[in-house]
Length: 403
Image (cartoon, rainbow, N blue to C red):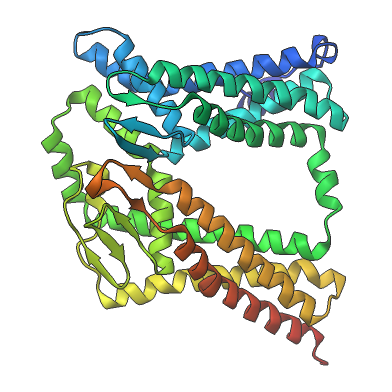
C-alpha cells in the first residue's frame, strides 16, 4: 500500500510529454526541438478547432469540414495576436485564456526538449530554442494561408512574426528553467533590481487579482442579465458549451479590464460604451452573455472601495521591496529608488497587459475595445508606484531609526 501511495504525487506532477533520461537527444538536439514544437502546434490547433468541429457535428455535419477547421485556424491566429481582415475591417482580439494555455504548453515542451537534448551550455540552448521557434513560425504562416478564404484573410508574414515571438518566450523560458541558467543569470542581477522586479510582480499580481474580484462581483450582480442573453441565443446544448468555453477564454481579458477600471481609466466596448469610475455609458454592444456582466451604474461607496485596491497593491509592493533589501542594509535613497523602479516596471507590465487584452472586433462602432495602454501605465505609476515608494521609505526609516 505504501508503494501505491508514493506513486500518486508522481502521476500528478508528470509533465505532458514524458521526460526520461536523455539518450538520443544528446546527439540530435534539433530533432527533440522540432518534435516538441510540432507537438505544441498540433495540440494548440486541436484545442482551437475542437469547439467548431463539435458544433459542426451537432448540426448534422452539414457542409464541408474545412469550414470549422478554418474557424479553428482563425481562432489559433487570434490567440497569437495575429490580425484578421474581415470584409475590409480589421479584427484583432486575443482570447488570453487560450494564449496563456498555449504558452504553458510551449514552456513544458521546451523543458522536455532541453532534457532530451542534455542541454548544458548557452550554445546548446540556442540549438534547442532556434529550431522550435523556426518550425512554429513556419506553421503559423501556413495556417494563415489556410485560414484566408471567403472574405477573411490574414498575412502569413505577420502570423510568422507574432507566433515566433510567442514561441521564443515560451520555449526559451522552459529551456532556461530546465538547464538552471535562469537562476544563474538572476543571481548576477543587483539586489536592488531583483527587489524592484519582485515588487512589480507583486503589484501586477495584486491588481489582476483585484480585477478578478471585481469581475466576480459584477457577474454575480448581473447574473440575471447574463442568463437572459444566454437564453436568447438558443444555441443548444453543444452551442452553449462552446459559448461557455469562449467566455472562459476571455476571462483573463475581463480581469485586466476590471483592473483598469480600478486604476481609473476604465475601458471601452466600442465607441458608445465606456465603463470607468467617473461614469458608465452603455451603448449598443453585441448580445453576448459575457458582456451581460457590464454594470449599468455604480454607487459612490463602491467607487471609493474600488479605488483603494491599487493603493493596497502599491503598499504590498513597497513592503516586499523593503524586505528584500533589508539584509543588504541599503540607504533609504536606494530603497526609494528600487520602489520607484518597481512602480515603473508595474506600469510597463500593466500597459502590456492592457494592450494584449484589447483590440478591434469590427468596423466603426466596434473598432476599439479594451483599455488605453498609456492611460493604464500612467495611473499604475501614480496609484501603485507612489504608495510603493512611500511605504518602502517609511519602513526603511523605521528600520534605521535608533531605538
